[in-house]
Amino acid sequence: MRLVVVWLAAVAVLGLASHGRPAAAAAATTLSTASRWIVDEGGNRVKLACVNWPSHLEPMLAEGLGKQPVGAIAKDVVAMGFNCVRLTWATFMVTNASYSSLTVAQSFQRLNLTESLAAIRVNNPSLVDLKLIDAFKAVVSTLGENGVMVILDDHVSKPGWCCGNNDGNGFFGDAYFDPDVWVDGLTKMATMFAAVPSVVAMSLRNELRGPRQNSADWYKYMQRGAEAVHAANPRVVVILSGMSFDNDLAFLNSRQVNVSFAGKVAFEVHWYGFSDGQAWRAGNANQVCARVAASVSRRALYLLDQGWPVFLSEFGVDNRGGNVNDNRYYGCVAAVAADLDLDWALWTLQGSYYLREGVLGLDEVYGVLDWAWCKPRNDTALTRLHALQRPFRGPGLAEAAPYTVMFHPTTGRCVVRRSSSVVQTTLELGSCGEAEAWAYTASQQRLSPRDSPLLCLRAEGAGRPARLGLSCGDELARWSLTSDSKLHLAVNASSSSSSPETSNGGMLCLDVGDDGRSLVTNPCRCLSADNSCDPESQWFKLVTSTRSVAATNTMLAQLPPKLRSWKIRSL
Image 1 (cartoon, rainbow, N blue to C red):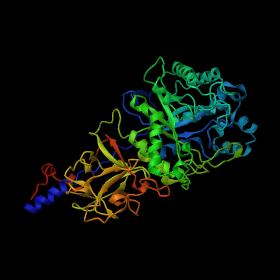
Image 2: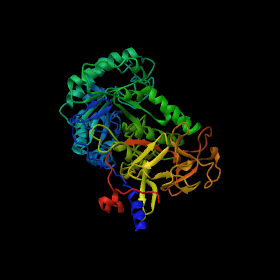
Image 3: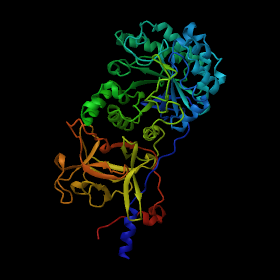
């Protein structure tokens, strides 16, 4: 009988695996802000998980409409897990008669885009003879019909590729950037879409830049633009960008915007691997991540702590997979996005362009779709976004007491528990919707399944699987956040008889096994100085979540309630 009791108790402390609530399709809603969060009419968190879809280049038509019907593209957006599109537009489309008077056919004919126009006649014949603004409205309408929210982004004034310091589109007073014309354009667009419920926000201007930029004009005109949009359409959230290509909002730390309305203002920031040149390729990834993440926080993300939403409205990578600078950057930006549970918009949807910088049919290597717009360009890169497409916490998501998720940013997966029998369990990477709920106590440096507090995560030696165990008092169960990036979870194995001496002072780091799934411990890599190695298989971010945690079909879930509550006692 004593053996039976011990066996049942051991089963009981295996605990409950967790899974998140399925992501619901976006519905038309009026959004507002509540401190740092975007919320719906009921005050519940709405996480913006968007993709950029350009409509601001010379043809002034949403890219790809010669490749697929607009409805098919909208359905692809939904199928890929995005609930929102940041749809770009050029001011002159609604303010300059030489552009605003054009039909789609006329716009393409004047650019000699005869093949693209013929393809649009095949895939979207109803758009060909529409005015450009009416074709734009049709795209917005189709997105809304598919449950996709839309953020209207004023990207440039004169249609064309963005962005250069001296392209005339950069800052107030530049050749194509008359503040009065800009406000007029914002007002027209806000009015035009005031009765369109899927249009939930308007971004005032993309990537302010160039030699004219100064904070005095920023406050003068951005506040004026915000007031104009709100007066014409008080329903939308107004998103303000910073300076230096949307990299700098630091000046707001000393003086915040002053507008006549509340609960409708957010800010945006951009963060790319190339924002820091080739630093990721040339430097130690841990040290670069720590330095760059701290810089982005000082320049923009600090606003979250001051009670303002910050929208990461552009980030992304070369989806061909061979760009070392981008690959190293991605793990860092994904870790920050998960940790802060940011709203974001990926650059970008389009696999190709009608015309970009004089090149017909240019391939967009940052696009999630391939050149033909038929399939994802890189399934792995798309899959790793899924964890970021769902909120971890926020208003209305207090479904569980706060717990920790072990997030692996490079793969976009989380640590889950798989039971091969009622007494054996393995830890591996899996869907973050099934993530194990952990409790991490910094003082004890202990990681335990939240619902099985007698167990703890243990290292068993270099190259060996990480396990759950009952012996939690030694060094192999004490996990510290090591390295500048604070993304290495490490134990000191130097004094353990079960583990040989390792490099880095005997430190073993949590790692992903050769199968790309299993959880093991290996000597910590690339902690500092070394610029040639890649540490990201060993990068884990401890993310706070309050999403519901549901039981998997384990023996514990099938035990009578009395037995589930039993605790292991020393025998």
